[in-house]
Amino acid sequence: MKGISYRRYGGPEVLEYGEVRDPKVGPDSVLVRVRAAAVNPVDWKCREGHLDGLLDPVFPVVTGWDVAGVVERPGAAVTEYAPGDEVIGYVREDFLSRGTFAEYVAAPLRTLARKPRNLSFAQAAGLPLAGLTAYQVLVKALEVRRGETVLVHAAAGRVGSFAVQLAAHLGARVIGTASEHHHDHVRSLGGEPVTYGEGLAERVRGLAPEGVAAVFDTIGGETTALSAHLLAPEGRLASIADPRVTEYGGRYCFVRPDAEDLARLSALAEQGAVSVHVARTFPLERAADAQRLSQEGRTQGKIVVTVDAEPGE
Image (cartoon, rainbow, N blue to C red):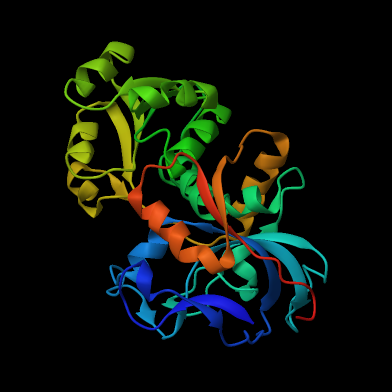
């Protein structure tokens, strides 16, 4: 089958389009014919070796964790899916090797859920990693409740845009930090925008004089420290960007594959509570360009690679 892989760590130039090994389908896995795979910052961070301390690479590594596609064949122990079912997945394993930027992927059952029927494959591919991150932080780490005020940093970003929508759906008042040219977008998601930069603390306090109940930090560094001082008494802080958040009494979160969480997220998308904006699509053979654009960090919305494999290819 065709896929995108790398044989060593490096920049986009190490990505190769060509023949890669066909996936073996274990008893608890599902062979998925890939229709679309979203690009995430973690893809290029893995490719450059930044996660080498966490995940062993088995070269050549097929890149990518997000997928939307069609079940080709369930594993011997899988009864939840049948050929032809449309699925989404956050297909992360505990090593780097069998990614989603290919015509097929063998996805562990724990990584999959049914695709939202109202989303295209490109839109659905953009949901799992970023959407699960937002869901698990807001629901499990911060335990956001109706009527609370929540501050979301980088509210127009890939994870932040999901967090604003989900927090609003949970009944929270959402304040979102963003550049001024993204303010209208944050409002459209259900948030109250405030501008980054000097004076941010005063602007947030102007909207929430008694402090905010919870902060979702997606930036890290000085933003994490600032966030701790914006909390109301008994307020909660979680970061996906800075492990040092624990020094401020907060919680560091790394998204995990969870079939039940992903199914709930898929249902929320079908209900219209969560939408996915696709900024640009690339064909599989141009995955290096897609990752390069993602790494530049200037795109609002998801970048998606599309795959047109047919059954039996």
